[in-house]
Structure formats: C-alpha cells, structure tokens
Image 1 (tube, helix red, strand yellow):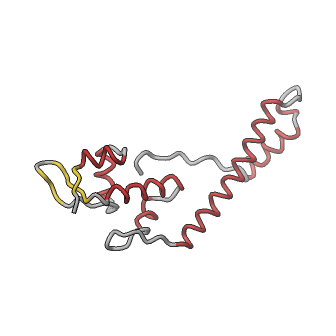
Image 2: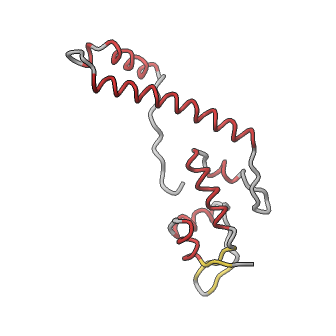
Image 3: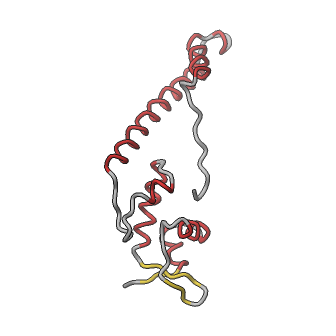
Length: 142
C-alpha cells in the first residue's frame, strides 16, 4: 500500500490542509495514521478527492457526496441522484441563458431608459414573480 503524507496530498489535490481536515471530520476521507505529527493517507485518497471536487463543481452538497461512497470507501454513484442533478443543471442553464440574453439586451437597448423598454419591464416582472432566482453563493470548502 502506497502512503502519502498530508503535504503530498495537498500538492496533488490542490486543497489546503484545512480542507483535508474538514473532509476528514465530515467522514469523506480518512487518514491511515501519522508519521510524527503529519497525517498519512492511502494514495487512493487523491482519486477520492477528485470525485469530491467533481461533485462540488456539479453543485452536490457534502452530505450528498458522502452518499456517493460505499462503507468501504469505494465509489457508489446513484444514477437517479445523478440524473436529478443533471436535470437541475439543465434548468439552471436555461435560467442563466435567459438572464444573459436579458442583460445583453439591456446593455444594447435603444429605449431612452430601461424603464421604458418592454423587454426590461418583462424581466422585472419575472424577477418580481420569483421566476428568476438569485445565484447561490458558494461557501469555500463546504
């Protein structure tokens, strides 16, 4: 079994030690011991961290990502959960496309003011009705 210390895991994954400790605390990864004061990990942790990064980039929560691993740590991807996330992303892409087009129109609108522009007024009504939802800010490391 190949072992990596926390410094090497940081280097290979691009994550700071604080994120690795947080993921360990959440049960997403596990160290296999210590050498002196430095945590040691199985080399497979790098692939596991890549899967976590991919899940985070897709918008999965850490709790959802935790469900993507079997008790032995091997990946266990729920195809229904993945399909639901793909559908959610499709909807978000649609919303963002509408928003991009509206902003581009507002930037080039020939109306004297934006409040006189019928397209901009429709956008305001959509925002007021909740049809346009704000982007969710991402919390680092979570």
